[in-house]
Amino acid sequence: MQPIWAVGLMSGTSLDGVDAAAVQTDGVEIAALGPGCARDYTGEEAATLRAALEAAATHWRPEGGMGPGARPALEAAEAVLAESHAAAVAECAAALRAAKGAEPVLVGFHGQTVLHRPEAGFTLQIGDGRRLAGDPRVRVPVVSDFRSADVAAGGEGAPLAPFFHFALSRSIGADRPLVFVNLGGVGNVTWVDPTRPDAAAEGALLAFDTGPANALVNDWMQARTGAPLDRDGAAAAAGQVHRDRLGSNAAAAYLDRTPPKSLDRNDFAAVLAAMQGLSTADGAATLTAFSAECVAAAAAHFPDPPARWLVCGGGRHNPVLMAMLAERLSAPVQAVEAVGLDGDLLEAQAFAYLAVRVLRGLPTSAPGTTGVPEPVGGGRVSCPEGPGATPR
Ligand SMILES: Nc1ncnc2c1ncn2[C@@H]1O[C@H](COP(=O)(O)OP(=O)(O)OP(=O)(O)O)[C@@H](O)[C@H]1O
Ligand SMILES: CC(=O)N[C@H]1[C@@H]2OC[C@@H](O2)[C@@H](O)[C@@H]1O[C@H](C)C(=O)O
Image 1 (cartoon, helix red, strand yellow):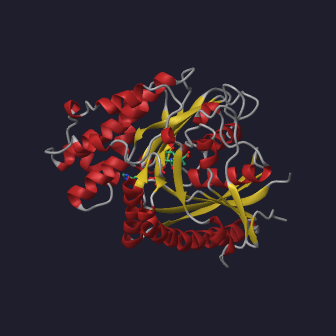
Image 2: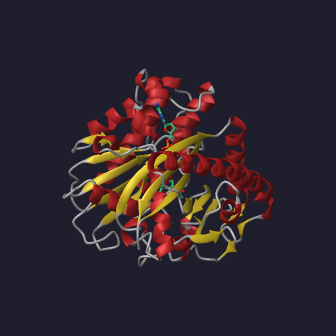
């Protein structure tokens, strides 16, 4: 297959906006990385998404799945996603046209995770692929629902960016194991051995969620100050770390658990609750230290020590978090910009890349990335003409 241009869309656990990015690929090699854009959610849109996460958590039952009571909140959130994502595709396509004179022919639509319970065989990313494909601003096939096939086959359903990390490690010429760290709402790591023949080969990848990265700090700042984040780590820099507050047994058990393993955004609520009574600065410092410790704890699970750690996601903009990581890791830690990548777009790029793999029937996860017993391809293709048709 000739490489094609695809646009990937990611609305992450931080609930701050949608990122879109163009990638030219045949689903194996990365031919080119194109432009991208970010569209922030308005306060009202973010509140609608947050309400959908709350409704999903309230109405889900391990035996019965998602109850009908969640439907109004989920539909309201889907409407927010439909509009914001169509606008993001249009903006990214215009940028691609201007930069490369090319048109995207495929969209990878992650959707919004509203609940992730892989241990019960359940994960839900809302967002209607068919509706997006039919939007006049899109009008190309859309791949959505990337995670549920993996969960149905016994995998964690996350993380899914690792196959893209493998391709990236090749494209930057890496010849020794390295680690990609994503500091989003939740943190995740991918240990990559770029010398293996392909991403699905045994020993090529080991990936898992580390713990919270920004989600708890964001929630803490929101509750204490009304600000959605600790910008540039200013509060954390002014505070003291209270190690005695970080004794959660559930958290310790998660860090020790052998990967693959994955998290729901709200799995560490007990750690946040333990900050009660601390000043804003001390709580921010303690939660930021906890995020760094969760990443550092990941190293114990890797098959070999990595040569370097490359960091993407919004947390790399936080100098306090980056310094805490550098203190705790025994190899150089740098933002992915050090190798010419864009750390704000990497996850959106991943879903562009994965969409092309889905189109080609290639696997998107493997035992080393999600714990699924055999490599598996997820995703559903919706064409503008209707579901199930294949693109020209
Ligand atoms: N200048 C900054 N200072 C401190 N934190 C920042 C800064 N910029 C971004 N962040 C943090 O990064 C977060 C956004 O990160 P990102 O967009 O990678 O998350 P996400 O993609 O929503 O999450 P996930 O990867 O878990 O799905 C913000 O909510 C904020 O906490
Ligand atoms: C269930 C879900 O949406 N998981 C997200 C989340 O955000 C970060 C981390 O938790 C990661 O596991 C995953 O996203 C990235 C893009 C992934 O699948 O690689």
